[in-house]
Image (tube, rainbow, N blue to C red):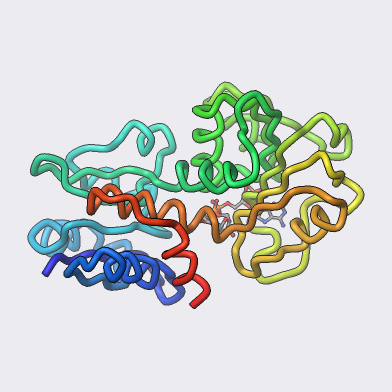
Length: 262
Ligand code: NAP
């Protein structure tokens, strides 16, 4: 039986086993998918003694995404540019790492809008932001970055050759087509980085926070007539991409969406 896992610390809330088990059922793949808690100090040994001899693939989550790269044989271009690995797989006998958050975010956004040539404002400069900046640059959007800690936005903007914004109060909302919240504001709270007055029907709002699904950010946008994309789409599409890498088949995202809500 093939073995897969999601590793993190802690790992209790991961949706990955439910999403991938739904895919196994759909394609009648004989495999198991475990959620495994791996403390940071055990990561190197877990890769060597557990993953390498026993596993065909693994999803990687907090806090290992930025540190696991040094224990692998190779990294994809996406993973090295983003600076984070969320997927382990085997390539011609070598242990490889890639990042599927970028393609997951792009596909989620594309359910509503084609970002090519559009002005996109990204709020937040953490790990998820890096994957989304990478994806939007690949998709040829015109990317602007704002972050609470200004210096971080400046540094990231320089690295990815995008623009940064110091003060949200000074911008004209109508200058932007797509607004993406990658901050943790809204996670288990009804707060938004933007005031309700920001929004108009011209905008597409994407919040990657998925607990709750209807965040204050998206509620305000929707009330103003904007298009909205909820965070579950990114999670599902990045898992569909993992499924393609591991099993070589294209899974209908609806199969994983049903498992997300099930
Ligand atoms: P992270 O690396 O810790 O970054 C957090 C970001 O939020 C930073 O830019 C931080 O700004 C900002 N922030 C935190 N509190 C703030 C506040 N009160 N006001 C303004 N900005 C604030 O986290 P991450 O890994 O990028 O994840 C961010 C969120 O995305 C989390 O809620 C996570 O669950 C979600 N996520 C969703 C998916 C998905 O598939 N849908 C995937 C990955 C992550 P500073 O730099 O100023 O501290």
